[in-house]
Image (cartoon, rainbow, N blue to C red; front, top):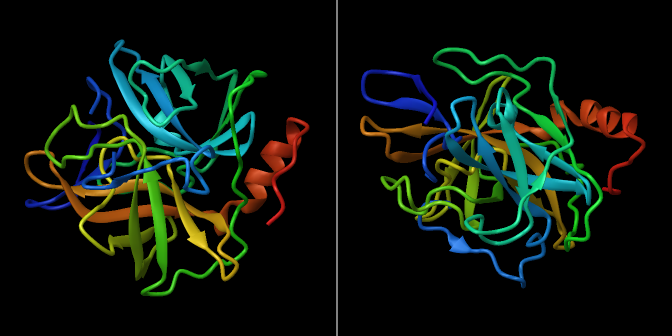
Length: 254
């Protein structure tokens, strides 16, 4: 697991599990009844040393995935899973990866531009898409839904790989790189949830992507604590649209 020192007591850790299969801690499994069930995908990763890992992504179109840059940078292979569970599922190899130019891994802090766009070959898997959020506010108390394939037990590296969800709320703290979140209940992001969507629900009940999960606090033995961070989509909407357009595609209407 990639870790960044924050203080003597806490570590700020990227959510990528780069070891034997590290969902959201205590999160509820996503089912067919969830509007975003077929818009969220798992990422099956292999690093330069041949070690497996997992992350999460969101479909912008049936063949374009939005995720976190730190999930896919320098990976030997990246495969996409269109299922509620990664283990044993068929994977589709990514044909092209575009990482935001501002992304640079930094010691002790999250990087701006922690976003990547993955392009897929033609496939016939069941999909749906989620638009980028038009609402750009992240005031204290605003509520969101985080979705991912990360650990379901904070201290267990083997409890990931199932798509789960958790309610999150903005703390009101924001930097140039991220927006801080805290859980609304007893479920929160952990290893493997990186790159997953942080969804905002509008007055009509429609979900949109407000952010991409980027980091989480972890304790001295690597356990996931409740604080988390997302990359706010509003700052990168133009780059996302331009990158998608460069490949001859367009985003879903907001």
